[in-house]
Image (tube, rainbow, N blue to C red; front, side):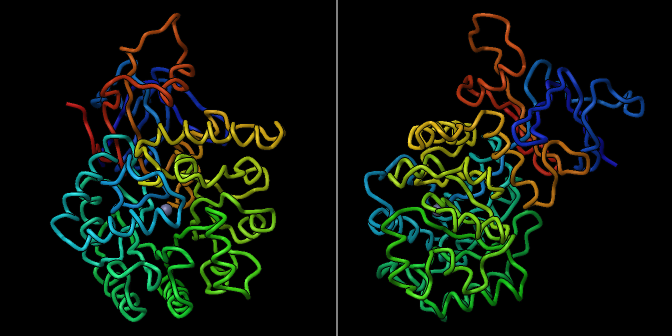
Length: 421
Ligand SMILES: [Zn+2]
């Protein structure tokens, strides 16, 4: 049995809104699974070597539950159009480049390295429509020690001449891709791009495939008002957008829906009743002027909410930044709601980024015993302070502000996948 003993200020989010801190404590894992958090080293581990990080913060690492790998080279660019124009003008041509295998490898390798270096150890990611490019992306993520799900995108209409499959191609390439997935830590997720880009025939086939192969599903929902109007024109039999996924058997407790900015009470209730996950991507929603999602209302109503960077509509890969974005967006939403909804606190938003997705991966929130070890070690000793700071104050600051090369080490599934030189 391999024992890993990590020493430092251990920080976790075992419940929504609550941070557990064990100052100068021990986080112990055996064969990659957490045994517990201890103030003093239990006798049975005495004499074993500890990884002592001194006064550093040892916190849960992050799950980025919505991002587009092939859009990685576009980060920071092209945020001057609303969703549908942005897709046609910038995004589809960029994703189409993933057809080139050398290019796909280079982009995937850089993305995987940057995820690891920023403490993102779990992902649910869109690839492109390309089977080979998707396998390359999965392989590079696996090699970098990232875990989670990646999906080959399905789209058989409205992608333009260079970025679209026939219905038959989309289905047969997806089946072939599923057969060729052979990774230990990166698993397939079915990925209809969004309702407008998938014909009824394709949606029907994908729904059947999801059921037959027991696959999770990821897509987009109610991001932008123009998109919602378009969906209602394409599916006049559905009174709301979400019903287009329900109609084809893709609306269940393993469905992740990005955005949900304009989901009203009925749509929110449908999510809660089916156990569908909302992936909140605040930075993206601001960049594409989509709106401010009613996250507090969803949380109060019992909807499951997790966070995503949504690169490259989102402009930051780091989940520290995306937590801050979620808090800021919730403050804007408070203003929109006549100061009637509370904004997200840092502990709440941290929970959404670090703990909320645990159940999707079969874990419990926080550093719970039995969980896979996913952790990030952060140093902040070079930052100025006007007074001695508590660990809680340092934790809250690190969401907004980190010193250069603050991340000292990252652990994923029990393995150290990043170490600062
Ligand atoms: Zn997206």
